[in-house]
Image 1 (cartoon, rainbow, N blue to C red):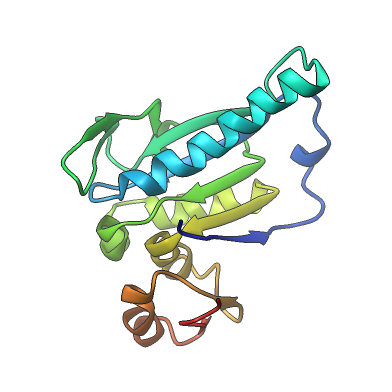
Image 2 (cartoon, rainbow, N blue to C red):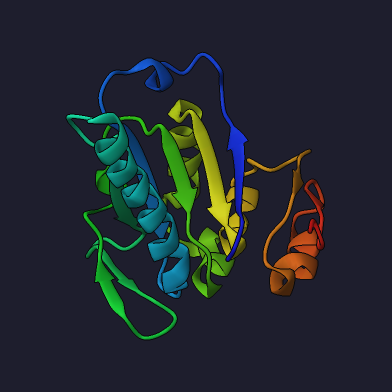
Length: 175
């Protein structure tokens, strides 16, 4: 399974001290890998089930939202499956506890999505943690969020990312 490259944002963020469900946003582009969307969603859904079964939680621990980069909220996945997200990034309000960027070939051209990189920079400042799955690291790197940091991505993208984003220390073989 693809690894999630998580990094912490500002420790002064209040979302980590909130009561109730932690808000998780998963951003997906056209061309995203369905596994990179469904995998994290399933992990957080399983965590919700675990907490309810083992700790008698009265509510879910995580509130998961799929966010499209397209205004029609559609995510045309690389495998041919189309998913409708709850919202698009332009309509998102409020802060996230966790913000993840799904991988796939769509993230390679993230700079062409009008307004997305400024939104990602702003939204990541308010999140307790941000991360990406595989090629989703393109978005974090393009937004400057990985500058000066050690990062990894799917082996297929490592060389291209290292060339495009020299301020990031890409590790092509972290395992």
